[in-house]
Every structure is written in C-alpha cells, then in structure tokens.
Length: 393
Image 1: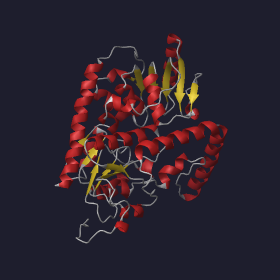
Image 2: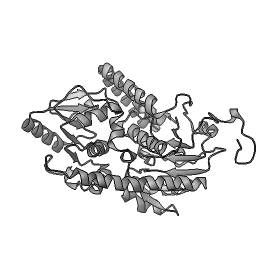
Image 3: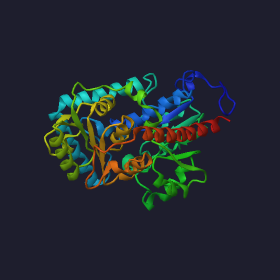
Image 4: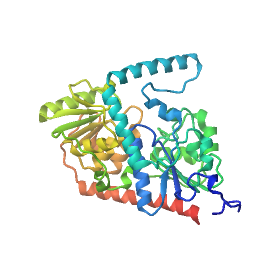
C-alpha cells in the first residue's frame, strides 16, 4: 500500500492497515445513552448496507466516558468548579450504590450492545487525539449527535471537526452534526470558524442551525435526518429486546415536566394501563410508576415497540415512536425542543407535540408518514454518499 507522499506504508505504521475500513466514524458511541448509541448504529449500518466499509473509531475521551462511571467524572476548572465536581461525584456514587444491581445491569446492557453492534474489539481504545494519527482511514464522518455543542464536549473539540494529524486522512464529512441550538454563543465564533474549515462537506441535524454555519463555511451546508431514520423498521426490530411485560404506557423523561406528569397520570387512569419509566429515578415523574434502570439500547427499542402508548420529551423516543408507528405524545423540552419540533413537522405530525393538551388517540395516516420518512431518508442518504464519493474521485 502507498502512503499519500508515495512512501511505502509499513504494517506497524497504523492499526489494522490491511483490515481497516474505508471510512472512520467519529461520534459519541462511547456514551451510555440510548440515542447516542442508536444513531451510531444507524449510521454505520446504513453505510455498510451501501457497500461502504465503515468502522466506528473507538475514540473514548474521559470527558465523554467519565460521566457514566460509578463515581462520575466531570471536567471542571477553578476551586468552585472542582468542589462541585467532587460533590457531584459523591452524590451520584451514592445513588448508583443504592441501585447497584440495576446500575450494573444497565452498564452490562450498554456494553453488550456496544460490543455486538458498534465497535471492533481488535481496534484499540483511544483516549487522546494523538492516538488517531496511526489509523488508516482516508475519510472520516463526524457525527451525528451534538458533537459541536461545547456544553456537551466541555468546549469545542478539534477531533469532532476532523482537525487532527493523520498521514492518511484526506477528507472529512459531517453527517447530522448538532450545535445543540440554532447557533453558538458569540464567544465561540472565531474558534468555530477555524475548526469548521477542516470539514469538506457539512450537514446538520437541525435546519435552524444552517444559517449560522453558513456564516463560516464556504460550501454547501445541508440539513439531514438523524441516522436512525436511514434504516427502516425491520432493521431495528432485528436488534431489539422486547420486555416480558405487556399492556403499559412507556414514559421516558429527560427533563421534569409537570404537564407531562399530569397527562400521563390521566392517561393511566383512563386506560387502566400501568406506567413504565426508563432509566432516571432522579427524574421520576412523581406518579407511581414501574421503573427500569437496567435498559440498554436494545431494551429501549423493545420497550417502545411493545408499548400501547409512549409519552416523552426525548427526541429519540419520539423518533422511534414514529418508526414503530406508536400512539405517542411528545412534550416540549426547555433546551432541545427545536429538533423534536423539526422531526414532527417534517412528518406532518405537529399535533403530536403537546403544549397544553393533546389527543394521543387521534388517528394518524401512517402510510403517508412512512412515505415522508422514506423520501427524506433518500435525500439524506444521497447527500452522505455523494459527499463520500467526491472524496474518492
């Protein structure tokens, strides 16, 4: 094999030179989070289905993985920040210890999914950007997820713009990258402008962010679907784990919402169905629920598939409710509501966003919804494949 400068590439120069894929994906696969892992699976599985040998790079920096430890680590600066970090570490460790069986089971389910569907265990885990230098990929896809949200990554990170040294890197494509909002605070403008120049083709998850990024990137900036929509329902059913329980309302809470609590309680009383809540006891909605803190991504899919109703303020719970054609309502989120509104509007399901009321039993033309998903997925997939092919010309 030849290196870009014409020198012969030695087997020891890079990990897996003879078995490395065409494309390396840099995303939040290392986060113990349903949406992060499922979007990573969707992107990898879609590309491989199109004949692209795509691998998820095992980049697992401590600022991402530390927050999911038994005693969570959160980067902090200054005495006040460090004091808060230590207090948070102690408080969360105590919570995890009190629910140690469920927490250990959840970690096991997350790791199982990651091993089976996302990563190649022969590839070394990389903690620092310098570890990316030896990888053999010529093209990198950064995204999706909130890779350009400095609140998530504790500042803008060069790796998620492809701005790192590598002898073989030739092209960087962002797919469904998210800022977490329509724009970044002005103090990030200069740094963002410098970093986004490393990205050859840019696509974003939220259409509202396109004007901001266009200020700094000279090329096309497209809005595309979250990768979970690139796969059809049978692909997700193939990896789900259905619960033994039946006859339930699934509630997935990412932020306390009194109106959602009241609605869920009324729905449970009206239907006689029990309520199952996933993952976060400290965000429990207040009404008596059955709590499952052990679920991983496969179990998350199974719970949505098996539910009679889904009530949530999570983007990915709403997304999979659409894919699984469930009776659902999505409630507004104070910080990330734009993406929920976007995906509902795109599918003609604006009435599924509940502000002050909502009819969860209102009929839905699911065939029309499926057609919209398919049309948008074709456009999004075409943008991604075109962007990759341009790098191969």
